[in-house]
Image 1 (cartoon, one colour):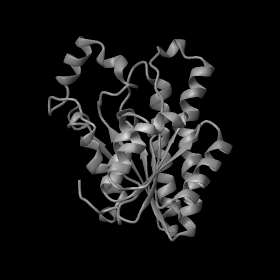
Image 2 (cartoon, rainbow, N blue to C red):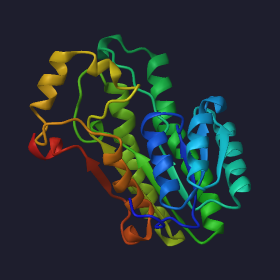
Image 3 (tube, helix red, strand yellow):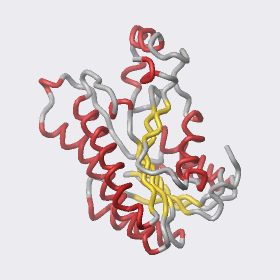
Image 4 (cartoon, rainbow, N blue to C red):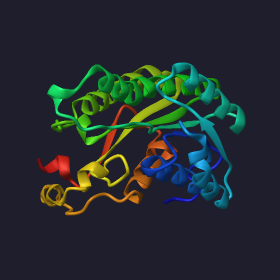
Length: 253
């Protein structure tokens, strides 16, 4: 990680209490940013707050349910007020539930799409309003392999993440004149609490590893460098792109 590349920046990370969100929040702090940490349960952010403060960076916690637009607006406003502005957003909050498509009901569809796509849009919108007033900023949306390939039993999730890629491109085109860059990060197979259902099956692990050219699953620190790059001035002429971090999986299928 390049120390200081985000010095003076103020970043909001959603879904920051665990997994990828937590890793990216800490990476931003290691790179010099002050961080607003958002999750539905604010008490779940205690440990990551302490970790960031040990790095000498400021951390504030925000209770935010990205399924509720009013909560999003209030949360983003609170983050900007607490940090003295908002320069960066990591739109990470998301959920997944595998279910055969013929068994998907409206409740499951709405829960996944409202969280992963609708919530990401309104969080980006609220954040961009602050960035616009400060001269610009950068947003990284967390897409997925399912933004590019079809995965059985993950149709609502894949639909939301494919939509998120389309949203990334459209916002990048619209907000470029505001000096707001919008990109996406697409993790391959990373073992987190959300994806544990897959890894519980040894046969699935063996079959998947055989399809990944690097012959290993991703570690969380494989994502931190790419994310910080997209947030930093090193990517100042990069917008509307999806950077896939998957050990070569999509390049080889």
